[in-house]
Image (tube, rainbow, N blue to C red; front, side):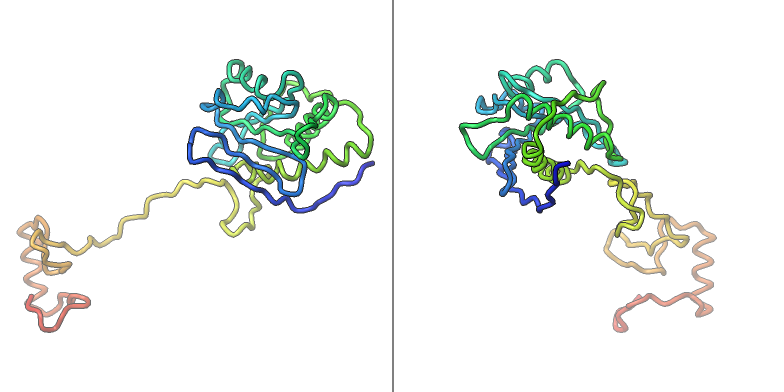
Length: 245
């Protein structure tokens, strides 16, 4: 059994001044190079991404934080070609996360490595509580040596970090979370109206003043006058003593 390393994934995010360009993400001390691509900008993907790798097609998270995904791999001709195919074949996704080998420009993932990583990503997402996979079957991944598996495991943590960065969490928030857990997006009920109407502010800027009435009825006027004459009407809070009512 190969060992798993839990080193922290320090991510470097590159944003272009042109909002139509993809967001480039790389794990600073890992071998994985990643690109976050909006569906509307898929045709702008550089030909340099026509290399073997794996990809995730992402659905928008719903109000409960759940989201759908499709896990795929690309060998020949590469990721760019495969994503452009998926642009025509699958309508559910709004973003694609592309993953390739990036430590050495002269090397790429081979077909076996891409297949193994595709299978492990599928397993990782299948057991996550927030993800619904669109794959009909689990991808069949080849058997690799322990050393090769250990190097490829280094891809998984940065990928999970990127998903978290863009709002695609894998597991529901705990009930004892600072915000109370539950959905990532909560519907807020409107605040109940107070029992007593707010003090009326006149068009001339007078108020707020409980002595003023908005659209008063004769009964309301007589009630106000009776309270004032009896000295039982509440005083205006914060009233300037030198100001006349």
